[in-house]
Length: 271
Ligand SMILES: [Zn+2]
Image 1: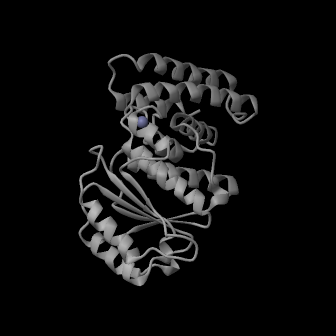
Image 2: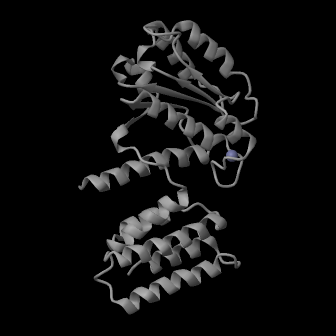
Image 3: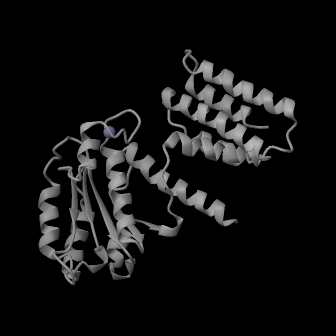
């Protein structure tokens, strides 16, 4: 597997987490492990932002939740840090979380507890935390950040989903429509039917977003064509496929079943 395709896979992985948050299907406890603490915290905040946003295309950056996140303070997003260098998260911190987690959120959505340097939680703190995980309050998500999970008890790890990240594989996050359009264009140029099916299945049922994906996809494919990526496809059938995607664009606003539109796109991408 080339390095480039690994980066792509990693991007998808992060997008998958954000998708889960948007769909309110995020696991109630996750451990994010990364050697870069700041990067790890950014991911956690992005997850919270995607979950709390009330806009149509999440995160919209404009709704009151997004604005609060941007300003660095959201009443339902709690970042718990140890109280200074060389100290660790103590049982008092976990007791605070336990009591606070049972109070309904300010905005009526999910509440997040992002625990920094979780690998340095004291043993007592971890044992208290396990009790919360055994009977997690509703609409509460715990995100444990750590550089390495070796300091965490197996009982904590077994009750959480663990995601590991490598900062060097990070990416400048692109809007969802650009990200999907790029992946679809690449899959089409490589005649990768599985890729085409995988990424079309990720298209959310949102007509406005679908149109943005199609527009971005046409320009992506045309620029890849000019770079020689579609050199095995004859010019006439290449242009026919592009025309079909343009026709599809016109159909999006008509009363056509959304799944049919996506299936049609699948067919258009087989050059
Ligand atoms: Zn928003």
